[in-house]
Amino acid sequence: MKQHKAFDIAIVGGGLSGLIAALAAADKGLQTALVAPPVAEPDGRTTALLADSIAFLEEIGLWEGIKPIAHALCTMRILDGTNRLIRAPQADFRASEIGLDAFGYNLENKVLAALLRERIAAATAIAVFEKPAAALKETAPGRHAVMLEDGRTIEAAAYVAADGRHSMMRQALGITSRQWRYPQIALVMNLGHTLDHHDTSTEFHTETGPLTLVPLGEKRSSLVIVLDEAGADTLAALDETALARELEHRMHSVLGKLEIVSPVGRFPLSGALANRFGKDDVMLIGEAGHAFPPIGAQGLNLGIRDIRAAVSLAAASGHESAQTIGERYHRERASDVASRTASVDLLNRSLLSAFLPVQALRAAGLYLLANAGPLRRMMMREGVLPGMGFENLSQKLRSGFKPPVRSRSA
Image 1 (cartoon, rainbow, N blue to C red):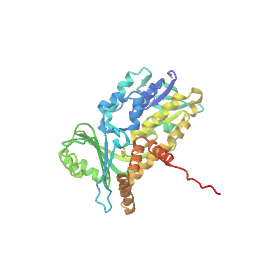
Image 2 (cartoon, one colour; image 1 turned 45 degrees about the horizontal axis):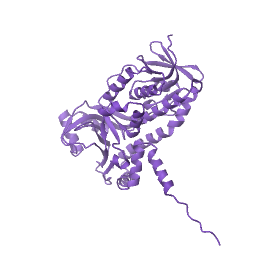
Image 3 (tube, rainbow, N blue to C red; image 1 turned 180 degrees about the vertical axis):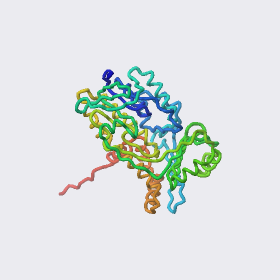
Image 4 (cartoon, rainbow, N blue to C red; image 1 turned 30 degrees about the vertical axis):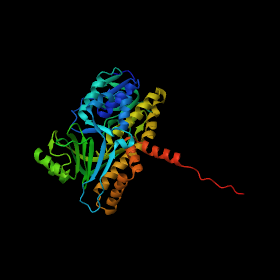
């Protein structure tokens, strides 16, 4: 059995989360092993990186290279595209209201992955192993080694599992994961259009789920449309010209004439949540720990917050205390992951509900967000800078609170 030197950290998985984690670890000065077998070229899907993720990418020296190939998202517009009795008003959210140039930036996954791989190839602190990880072997209580398919062994002070929904690392640790399915299919594609998007992301809420347009360059946008299975089958059967015309109709020609400029992807919607996010010397990031529908641009952004926590803990831990790092990581990430998963699930189910009180609550909530400035700004901050919205509210309440003056008795 051929063994490699011990590393400070080993990352198992070569998707976007794994690639970013390797570069973040190297930036912290950690000797890093990246187990990343060659993967199929990413499809035409895109990722909207929000302000909190961008701040982290700036911190580790990646954003300067990403920004020129990303496209600003300055306004978020929500429109009720249902035909229901109770409909929500239009709600516009502008990044300038909370002092940001943009809520985030959108770019194609394949473009981002290529840039990250290029950076990794140039990083002397990262050793890349292209054979898949076959097993996680316990070497001492709470300590492990990763076995590769070719028999090599990688030992590290800490491990990051970035190996997706069917994570071998998670299963090897005996961590269970709750899985669920939605009665929906997402069709994903990129569009060319004749009208300018003005750096605005537009989301139509429909009876089957959201139809979301996100800027992707000059007169280009990415589209995710969530449908029931029959609706997805109907649209997917259309040729490109007919599909473009049908989409124009559904989005009320807000972007003018459309052209399909990428393959159409089809993805059944589902969710997953691990019952723990770390154990012993292993930390779960990205879809190894949590997965949910493409709503609200939360997927990779939540994964980047996982990466920030995992790498910070690894950098602060010595070999002697590494076996407890998984527990510390779980405590740090559990609340954020649970709250984001619940909010995405609730929003998606509220769109599907035909129950009038649920529709009324959703419409009332959007009305408040559209018209109550302080509440709207708080929720915008919380959406792109998690924790900052409620922290800002708390600071204002504290600064504005004056204790009552008690009259002195004679």
